[in-house]
Length: 69
Image 1 (cartoon, rainbow, N blue to C red):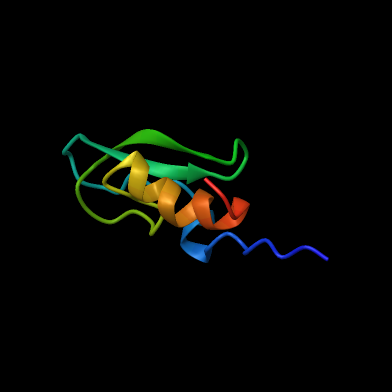
Image 2 (cartoon, helix red, strand yellow):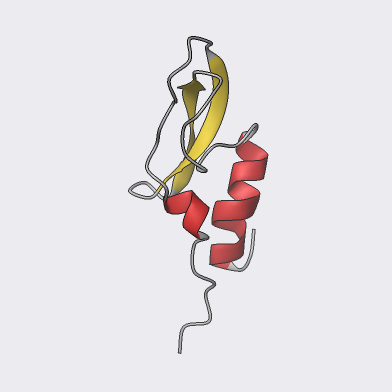
């Protein structure tokens, strides 16, 4: 049996940089590569798949899935 925790739903949200004009470096979980990658956030809107740091993204989307770091 597989005891791995499923990836949280917010990590599976499609990448959406929003509709404003700022350029803010943020991170999102790429479900294809199964890792967190940087993207440029516009400053408003977008999806829930948006983290201020790679660490927090990995913490939520990757760490809990593998069970060990």
